[in-house]
Image (cartoon, rainbow, N blue to C red):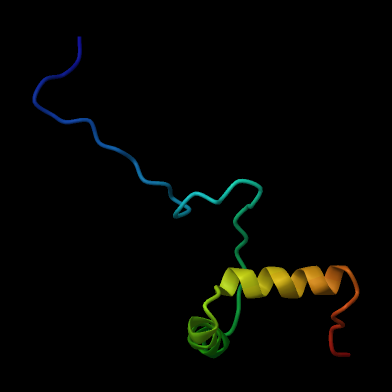
Length: 69
């Protein structure tokens, strides 16, 4: 028998919003100042930090972007 009087609570995801289909969360450690500057720069570009990181990583993987020595 269910307990009366106490509403069922809905648990939120611990990792924040659910990722879109085909995407997975990735946690990286980045200098705070770099994060702030990046967030301010993506606003007028109407994009997201995630989109910038994904594009840079994809460019690195396909060889169009090289890391500095």
